[in-house]
Image 1 (cartoon, rainbow, N blue to C red):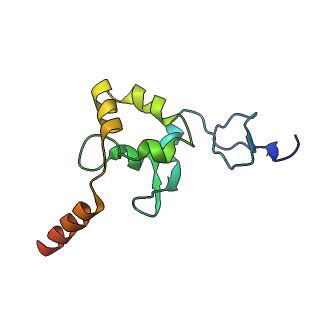
Image 2 (cartoon, rainbow, N blue to C red; image 1 turned 90 degrees about the horizontal axis):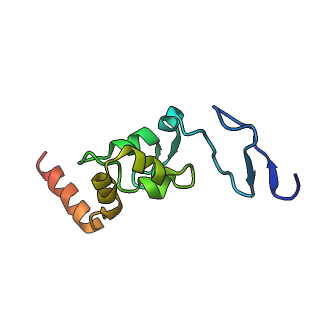
Length: 114
């Protein structure tokens, strides 16, 4: 290969022919291994596994940012469509975060109640 393209050294079940060009793009088989994949969480500021993102927080839905965070790693939308009911998938797409000020005020209130 030439230029910015080079052969990828496969890990954990990645296809032998996997190639990346210019960007470090993680490829892995659509298997249970995805639950153990780790990336930096923009909300928490540290590393989290995909399985953690799928747990969500207050609801039975995954974290509202799961698609934004994992789309470069694998086809997370298709995965979620297969795993969630149609209603839950649409609810995840429609879910919006609370405004920052609301979250801050809730945290202050929780701290006062301790």
